[in-house]
Length: 204
Length: 252
Image (tube, rainbow over all chains, first blue to last red; front, side, top):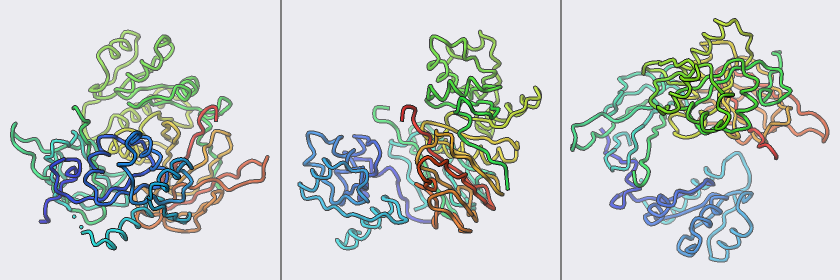
């Protein structure tokens, strides 16, 4: 079986994964931003994400300067753009093609990781950080997936997940005796399969 | 070619579609609720949706009594439940199985439509497109099941988005209500779809829409000369294909 990989390691202060961070054009969770930013080897904004970053780091913006901001720049405000340019952030205009701002930002991130020689995961998921919410799911977005799982409350035993047949939503983790750590979730699939899980709110 | 069907007709005061309304457990848009409620032949809440209905109709609750509330009742509060029971609303407990509250609510709605011999064009669902990601996907899964449960159109509206699963075949969508937002998309959620379209800014000419290859998002309508009505959007697909479109905010 493959090495265990823990999705929520990145949000654990004691987590060991090396990460890079891409911020998209959506409202930001301040706690998530702070922990991920502090760990990330590279940080980037896709277009209007810079507006959210600017607003949420107000008063401390100088400590949250992205390595680059990419996109077609139809969402970033002139004020925010000028601020980051003035602070030396790289602006990488990617003209409107068939690719979304996210895809292009990811593409640039991967080039930068290569260029700077930074280092690389899978289907043995650690779910014991304490940050896991109480739901998870496996969603065959692209097409049917022949799936086997362990560690879930409702496991799949070589069943085909497919929209219109079965989609695993509102699933959860295999119960364990109180005080015992959760077992890892293992998933084997023959096609790309979307794993989704809940994140406990801070203070819960 | 198929008859033209207009997704946003249900939100037009002058719209002609006969609708039934299902409310799911998500924050409600007050304007949408009011117009849909006033037109609906039947109205139902799935479990915790009743909490949202109760809160948003505060002060006028008596005029917004659903025909039934269904579900496993693990989300509805005891206070809200007692209120609607007291007012004579039917409570239909559907024990936890492999089906979601939404699917079960839809199933009951279809039975009621039959039982009362109602003529209905569209079942409109409020909620289901925000919140937990797995539950959004579960809403889409219900649309898939709906294809084999009924021939009626089943659509989901929340906030500024509408979702409608197109059956395999040809479709002609009216997009001229004035309520259309400026984006639309075709999303091959279940698997690859061989697709032909007209009336979009970026049309598909027998291309295969597929995750990992092409997915039509951030699309829009074919531009027309000022003062001219938009052309209908036609879509032909060989597999179920999810149509999604923006709804203009009131006052925009």
